[in-house]
Image (tube, rainbow, N blue to C red):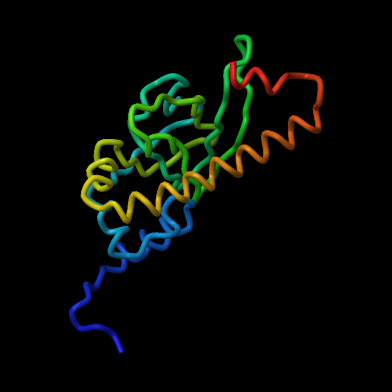
Length: 171
């Protein structure tokens, strides 16, 4: 039986919760916790070849892809090398969950258009400050995300042994 005192949500909000829960960083959150993000979210449209942010920029927002494709690139000797292609239902700018972080890659729109949901860093930090459980759940997801990236990096290194030295990561 449904609790008569629990909040009911509009169908638009429920659709947004479903969308958000499909994204790694929100997968552990309940509807009540996801609802905390709704007032901070806004949609933004981008066109092909538009840069969402550059490497080394301050990490000012988390981006959720509603529609379109985004390439995450790194600058290697004046060339942009794609390290990952993202599409609907994926997020980027994940280091905006951390304080005082800078972007590690450039995010570029590669579809004709992209529709992104933007969640500003300051709003995320306000939610984290007032709700440590949300912060703990999202930081656990972030740690898992970074762990998976490290595993891919090390696998790639093993497969291309000799092209670079992992020791350089720690110098």
